[in-house]
Length: 260
Image 1 (cartoon, rainbow, N blue to C red):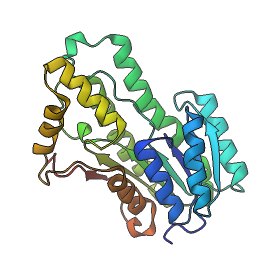
Image 2: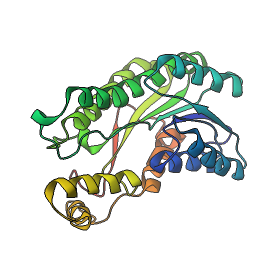
Image 3: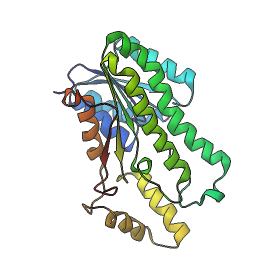
């Protein structure tokens, strides 16, 4: 097992990609603190981790609230005898879809920026002292292909994912001397309930069917297939294992060839 006895935190662990990432890390030997606002969904994923023979700790946490993040990290340190080997920042929001920049409400823009940028920054801030002390660690931020190119009608979301890249690269430069790898995994559209809602939102604005919107996404991909949560989880596993020991400050794109 590539992560045998490693101690991990996964934010946004309740659903979709977060759940797939959590169970994949557990399958490879990691004990995990699962953090999200929806603790009922966390309990289900924690049960899967337990069934794999690993330890799971459920912590309710809004990653934009510093006091809650600090308490979550303290919980992890207590549960794991002071160690934190892995942090995966999955928590985030989508925000307005099919909305021209002039029609985005300022509060909606701020909400997306806060959730996706501050929600990545705060867990890193509070985990890093432990990783520096132990002179090792793996941090993986979930970015997105919207942060690799412009994305019309998605100004807030695209801006937030560009920021995740900036956080990733800058923190990688700061922490490299402490043997800490910091990378991003950048999915394209992923087959989750969130994708369904996105397709529904686009279809409503355009007057299309949901199937037409879905097919548009598929045709934009070189491989002509939509990414699954497990595809993303496999990439995260690589970035949290010793297989990626000399990779830092990078973005691993998992999008079926959308951004080629």
